[in-house]
Length: 69
Image 1: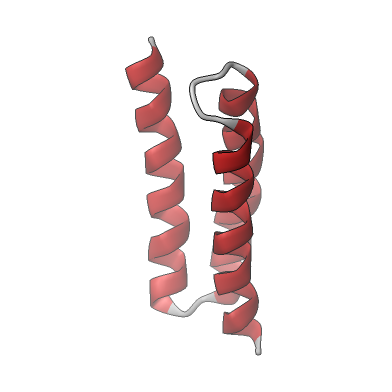
Image 2: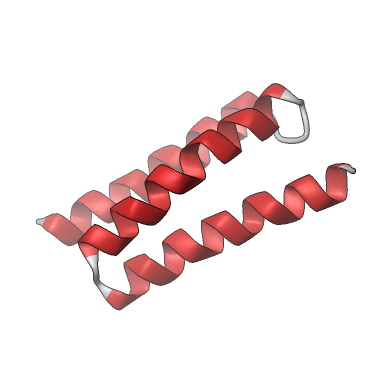
C-alpha cells in the first residue's frame, strides 16, 4: 500500500516539474494546486514525513514563483 501511495506522490510532483520546465506559469500553478492535498494526505498517513512534504511544497512553490518574475 505504501509503495503505491509514494508512487502517486512522485507522479504528481513530476507533473509539476514538467509544467515548470515548459515555462507555463498557469499550468504549473494548476498542477501544484492538485498536488498539494495529495502530498498532505500522504504525509498525514506517515508514508512521507510532514517535514519532507513541507520541503517539497516549498521548493516547488519557489520555482513556480520564479517563473512569474
